[in-house]
Image 1 (tube, chains in turn cyan, yellow):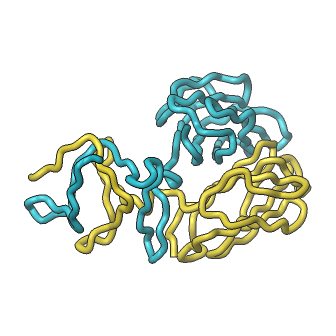
Image 2 (tube, helix red, strand yellow):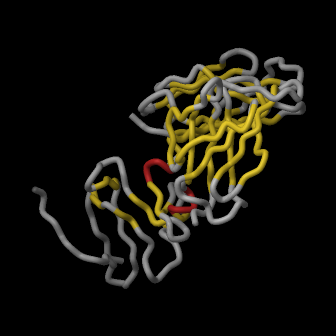
Image 3 (tube, rainbow over the protein chains, first blue to last red):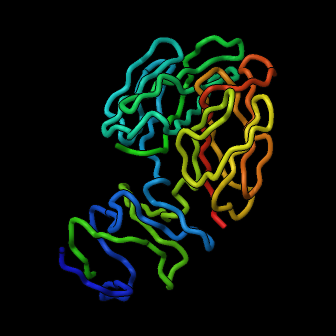
Length: 144
Length: 133
């Protein structure tokens, strides 16, 4: 059994509740830490975190402008992009989200979801694939 | 400034302290945000055709099939108000929007992307951000 320090509060010498560390891990279940919500209800740290995101220029540069946990992306033709993750998801039942913008009404969808990657498509009002000027993609769910 | 140095800190619960109103985390760029405000409070990936069912979820107790292209995702722990943020996605060329919402559920409304026909889709997803009750 690892050594334990049992205290109710931890403060620095300045009296602040401020600590530094690199990793938080659940004590009972490594992947589950309860967090007090805004009111009286509690929520779960791991389940509430966005597991990956990317912002993408689809119209001319095909560049990812900012990302987290995305190892690479692939231009999947007009209106399509595939993101491959650095750390895979735990299953295919996660929740992707996408928003895109260009001069036309734009419909965006996630498809071909796998634990290692996710493909998105962007459609105009005529149901034709179209490249968005700028799009944002993310997902919540379980990491592997 | 004093520092507690360690690679891992094992905890069961993290709560904000009594001196401040929220638990703060530092960000990569040096800014700070509050942990509860940054967390998704609910998400759900579900089967939207035939008999609807949850594939995977967080803070979702069950689903209600309201009609063609309409689903209610019911929360286990309620939100504090109905003015929360929501995001949807579908594996089809569809418009997915909010028909109405409450502190205890969100009501998804799905139409074909190129006209106003309401349709069931195989795998709708929703993500909820905001304040828990």
